[in-house]
Length: 276
View 1 (tube, rainbow, N blue to C red):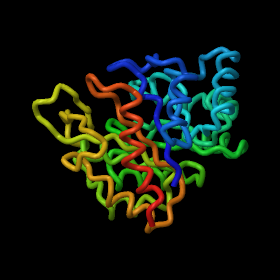
View 2 (cartoon, rainbow, N blue to C red; view 1 turned 90 degrees about the vertical axis):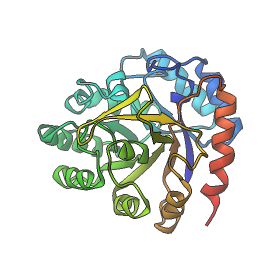
View 3 (cartoon, rainbow, N blue to C red; view 1 turned 45 degrees about the vertical axis):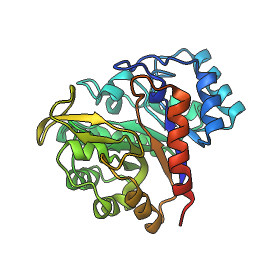
């Protein structure tokens, strides 16, 4: 497996359009911590960025020898708001950005059955360029459970339309998210995202799932088993022969700096990525 870091780690709380660090500083820190790639979001570069910004980001990636694990090309995709599915209806700019960054995986969102034909056409356009569309297990989408994910993947019916396993969102949606559930998705898996959460009715953080309603969650340290114990899930990935990206999608805690967050994640996960 290859360890990736979402640039979300440098986004200020409740902000998805900026990072608190210049990208070259963030990339250098990620490389020094041991990450092999970055998961890109619109806070760094988007489909609306001018060409010179895209070229500057690519130059930094090349200089630091960091790959791009996946591209989330606009703010609505990161926020999963009502406009999140528009990328499927105009996929060209997202394919262009992904190729410009030297990546192959593109994040998309589906909110209902009416998105299926757009997903099919977008996947066909991506296939012509050797690219893959990826849908995360996420509240408010047709991927809130493993069963829904498999049904949507079958409905789209494209080999280059795949899934990113995200146990935190599955937990918030009241869905099974253990080793056996992960194993069912492995044949369709293109990425794994991990943010460690636990359910907490007193938390102000709410994931508005469709199947269970508002879920109050609290972020906990990435190595805290009181949330999601990632270790048996990593063991499952090894056992199933998964060799793709594993992405840390953890936000910063109050008072935590980016360096400390990166070191904690890398020190906890890198030995487990290598373990067999």
